Length: 138
Image (cartoon, rainbow, N blue to C red; front, top):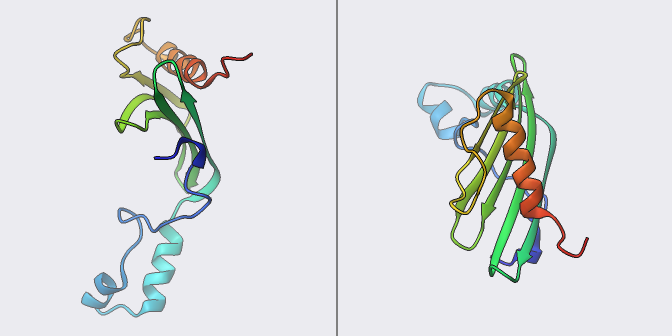
C-alpha cells in the first residue's frame, strides 16, 4: 500500500452485508425497483467518513487512520480505527454506539494499561491513536 495515497479516494463500493443484490431479490420475485427501495431504506446515512495515513521512518511502518460516522433509524454509530497497513493489523479501535463508548488496543508495542473499564478504555484508545498519528516534527 502506498502510504501517501490516503484512503480510497472517495470511492464507495457496495457493502455485501447491507446491500441486497438484484439476483437475491429476483429469487423471491422482487423487481429491481423493489430491491433498490429496500436497499435505500436499510442503508445507513453516512454523516462523516475520512481517512489519513502516516509513514513512520523509525519503525518503517505505514499507519492508516479510518473514521466513519453512520446513522440508521435506531442506531448512531461512530468508529475510529488505526491499522498497520504494511502487515494489515488492526492496532486500535474506538467506537461510540448509541452513546455507549468502547475502546480496544491490540498493538503489542503499547505500554499502557489495556483493561481499564468504562469510558477509560475509549479514552485510552483515542489518545493512543493520536499518538500513533502525530507528526513527529511538532
